[in-house]
Structures are given as C-alpha cells and as structure tokens.
Image (cartoon, rainbow, N blue to C red):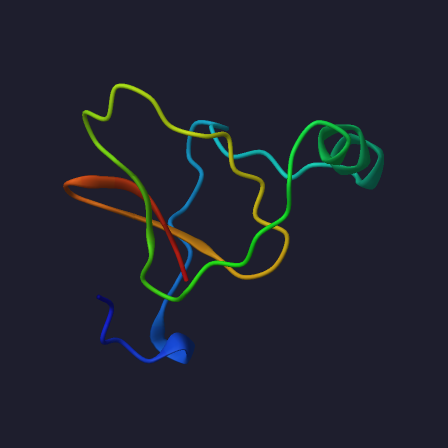
Length: 74
C-alpha cells in the first residue's frame, strides 16, 4: 500500500522506450479487444517474476516502477 501523497509521486522516467505514449487511434484499436477498469493508488499491476500478466494502457494517472515490482498505478 502506498502511503505517499499523490502530489509527491513522480512518474518513473521511460529511458528505453518501454512505455510509449499511445495515440488516440491506437488506444481505440486496443479498446476493441480489451476492457477498461479502474485501479487504486498503490495497486500492484504485476510483480517482477510473474509468469503471466495483462497488458495495461494507463489512460489517466501515472505509472511508477519500484524494486520488486515492475509497474504500479499512482
């Protein structure tokens, strides 16, 4: 559980292009095959070492990586 205030969180820099910004047509194309759902602050989307995990497109908010997890919503 994240105890840091949202205003203090910063997005992890995307140094290697692993988390590109998608265009609206790209998001619409993905939406035809996926589902939208809300997340909670601090929710772990997947952990390092998980054998399988979903594909996530973050439409609002920020993504933050930390040791032991690969991405969390913020």
